[in-house]
Length: 192
Ligand code: 5GP
Image: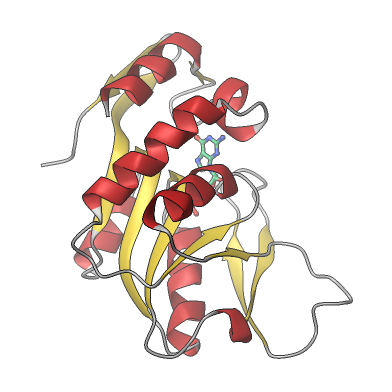
């Protein structure tokens, strides 16, 4: 997606060769006009996938997922990363190792918000090692739903997540696949 890739080149910053900072338009301040285009692009790419529900992971997945849900006229569900005392009935949980915090957290889904047989589109901001996506896939499976597609805003294609998810049979659409990255340099391209 040209518009997104231009924005990453203009405003993104590779902190090193494995972490990309995009907090001026995606993770902290949010460019909602760009997110609307991101939502439209996901809607276009998954138009044929017969999706019933969009699921995302708090917090940075929410903006792109909400825009896609609006565009596709679908309900959206947020998987939680933090444990809450009011979230105790009918919950599904799994440990996920956080790429940015370098520590595990409990990914949580209230099963009432995903129905057995639902075809789910998972949308997230970044894909690195695939930990978050595989954790979400596990909870959706436990809820009896089918993970029909994964939409990622930025995937660092040189890290293992993208290949692993595709090898596991998931359909993964990436709007900005980063093929190489180092300080002051970001290159795009899908892996072969
Ligand atoms: P994974 O679970 O695929 O290893 O990592 C995905 C999650 O880690 C994303 O939901 C995102 O929150 C975070 N993440 C991974 N790589 C980056 C990165 O380069 N920059 C930022 N800002 N977040 C990242």
